[in-house]
Length: 198
Image (cartoon, rainbow, N blue to C red):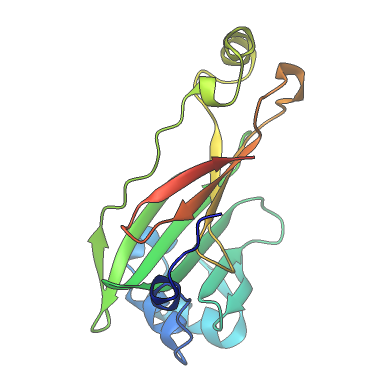
């Protein structure tokens, strides 16, 4: 078993600075924050709910400042918006995603930023490229693309605890006998993710 040096573990611990999660939430661009105005964001932070356009109510499902994680959703809808952040050797790294559903769930975006001086600065983090053959045997992969989806439907879920992103295979995959149904993207000190199949 390979041990991670204590130095890296300390650098990659989630940041727990008081109020920082809320500061990051308010600094995000509208396009990656459900098009919420600053007043709506303040209302969400203060009351855990806000009414958008007079009728659509959004709710904070999770606001975990100790672990640097936030999730927003709607009681009647399957979609969810997630944000998390942690400390790296290059600064405070932020991840934001929106998971939409209908009929199959998928990430409409997954973006990374550095947070510095109350501003978010976009940065590129390379994620592994997955293929159908990573999850299915060849014959089953062909059946899957014919009957379920022409492309591989994966959902990336941000961590509330720890640093690793969970990726799960979406849809009814049981008839196609997948080799794997999920992948853990394990954060590496060189600012990449290593894929471990489950």
